[in-house]
Image (cartoon, rainbow, N blue to C red):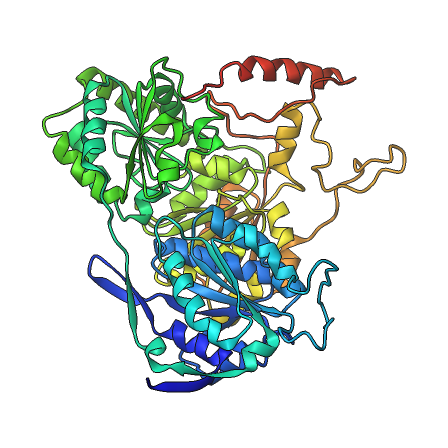
Length: 620
C-alpha cells in the first residue's frame, strides 16, 4: 500500500480538501474552507497545515462562537450540502464554540468543529488552560461538546484519524443525523507524523439519497387524506432542505390543501399563493391559526413540531385531529401518534401526488382558506403602512425592509421580538430568502450568520435585522465582514433593552423587570433610572462599517436605498417604540406563571394561564 508521511494536522486538511457531495447529479466540494482563531493549542498543528495548503481557504474570525454561527448559516443556505470547518485553540477558545455547536445540532445543520486539546502524552500536564479532574486523566473541557454533538471523538494517536474522518463525514452528510461534529485534537498529536495510506486522500463523493417511505404507510396516509374534510399542510425546514418547494406547489395545486409554515419552513410557498396561509402557531397569522384550529388532518412536512409551531399543543383543536408526518427521521415522523412517512420530502410529495390522483378538497373549504389569505394580506399591508412615531413601530420597519429587498434577497434574524414579527409579516417570494435561526434562537447569531449567508450567496443582498440586545452580545464580526469584503446590510433596531422578554415579563405579571437598559436608581435600588446613553451608531462605525441613522419612515426608506448602493457592510440604526407591538392573532405560548404571589398582577396572570392551559391537547 502506498503511503504519505504527513502530520495529523496536514492529513486532516488534505482529507477535507478531497471530500465532495452529490445530490440529483450535482456535485461540488463539501467544505468551503475553515474559520479559525489560533492559539498554542492549534497554531503549530492544524494552523501549520492550513498555511501549507492555501487551496483550503482560511477565514479569520473575532469570536469562536460567531464563526460556528457563520458556518451553520452557510450550511443552511446551501441546503446542508456544503459547510465550513472551525478550529480553535484549547481551553476558552474551544468552549466558546459550545453554544453555537448546540445551535447547529438543534437546527440539524452540519458543521465540523476542530478544537485543540490537552497533551495526549500527559507528561507535561497540567498545561496552560487544562482542566484537571481527580477522577481521570482522559477528561478535558472538550468533553462538554459530547451532548451537543452528533458525533464526537478525540484523536489521541495520529493513525486514529484514518477511522474518525469517514465517521465524521457519514454524520455530516446524513439528512437524518447531521449536526455538529467535534473532533478533539490534542496539540502534541496534531504535530506528530504518520505514514497515511494514499487512498485516504483520493477524491471521495458522498451521495445524498432521496429515501422513499414504506409503500403500505404511504397508502395509509393517502387514505387518511381522502377521508379528511379540512386537511392542512404545515411546511417545515425539511421542505427547503429537500429542495421540495416546486413539488409542494404542484401538490397544493393538485389537491387544494392549504399550507401553513414554520419558522424554518417559511418560503416553502410564495406568500401570494391563494392557499398560502403564512406562519402558524405562537408567531402565526390569523389565517393559519384559524384553519389549524379546525383542521381534522394535519400533514407535517419536515417539521419537528416545536412548541412554537403547535402553540404549546393548543393550535389543533378538532376533536378528531390526526397527523401524517413526513420526515427524514423516524423520531420526528412518529410524533403526535402520526402516520409516519420516513424519507425525503420531495420524493414523498411526488409519491403522495400519484396516490391521490383525482382527489381535491371541497370548493367551500378552499374558498374559506383563500378568504382568510386575502384578509391576512390586508392586515400585513395595514401594519406596513402605519405612520407611528417617531420612534417607528417595528412592524413598519419590517415593511420598509421588505419593500427594499429584491425577490431573491435574504432577510436574517434569530432572537428577540423580531423573529415573531418577521414570521407573521415578512412576504417571502422565493425559497431560502427567509433565514431564521429559531431552533435555538441564539442572541448574537445575526451578524455572524449574515456573513455565512453572504459567503454562500454572494450575488444576493443580505439584510440582517437585529435588536440592540442581540447586537451588543456579538457585534465584532462586523470586522470580519469588512476584512473579507463581504457586504451585508445590518438593520439595527434600538429599543433600549430586551423588548421581547419585556413584553413577556408584563404578560406574566412582572412589569418588564430587568429588561430595560437603565441606570441603577439610588432611590429604589433597582435598574429603573435614566436610559443608558448608548451610541450604537458610533460603535458600529468604529468597527469599520458605514453607518446611517434614520428616525422617520422616509429616512429609513432613503437609508435602505443608500445601503443597497453601497459596496461595503452598512449599518442602518433605527430607534423603535418597544411598546408598539404586533398582535398575537389568536395564539398562546406555555410560559408558566408563579402559582402564588403577593403581587396582584402575577395572580391575575396566573388565572389567565390556568384558563389557557386547559386547552392543551394530548395526541396519543
